[in-house]
Amino acid sequence: MIDDLPPLREVIRTHDLAARKSLGQNFLLDLNLTARIARLAGPLEQSVVVEIGPGPGGLTRALLSAGAIKLIAIERDARCLPALQEIFDHYPGKLEVHNSDALTFDYKPLSAHENVKIVANLPYNIATKLLIDWLRAPQWPPFYQSMTLMFQKEVALRICADFGSKAYGRLAVISQWRTRPEIVMKLPARAFTPPPKVDSAVVHFTPIDPAGEECRLEDLEVVSAAAFGQRRKMLRSSLKQISKTPTELLKQAGIEPEKRAEQLSIAAFTRLAQAYGVSRTI
Image (cartoon, rainbow, N blue to C red; front, side):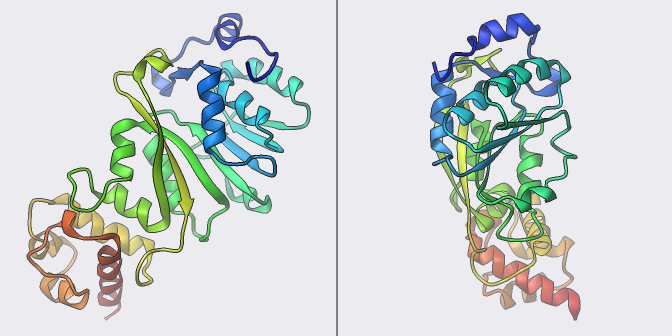
């Protein structure tokens, strides 16, 4: 046990918190596992932690027990609020709960805090959308120092995929251009209640200076979308949808027109985005 609060199964029974598929809920009830995730987020003693979808509060308790100076929990499901209130009472002054949708929550005020870390067992139905939104932070480095996030295992593999692999795609390009993602933990479906149909994995993201030449994120998204939208085609063909002269565009980026999207490194995609950005201004 990480604290002397009731076991999570008892919390779920007391507050009638059956997981809802519509909210992407799969609860992680093993406090040993939630404590491990908290440790993977790094030292928390000086951190303000943001958690998405705390549910009955298993990871919340682990993060507070690990020493987070403040935890900002964003929970859409109002049924979970009484359970979170019990944690609030147990850790006075450390838990701040927002009954809000994480997709529309205003994260800008968080930039006033130092050493912010996002740690969450993300609802699977919004996990990728949330990640992309955080990677699109207009100011870089962003308001957070790191992210430690749970995804479906397949999504985690796509995020961390090396170029040249089948899993390599737009998600890897955007993620690895702005962060260093690493799979730090894998969990079988049976670890959750109810068990999802797929295994899961925790990815730790460390923000970095964008790789290669400077480019606009918007341009990187456009070129990667075009390239991977027709990934079986050579780039001279797949880029026709964004450029009247794709071969010239590729030449400017130092890329062979016969290559395909999965053969380009992050740095190569950055050069391509830079060349595309210049071409739009001519």
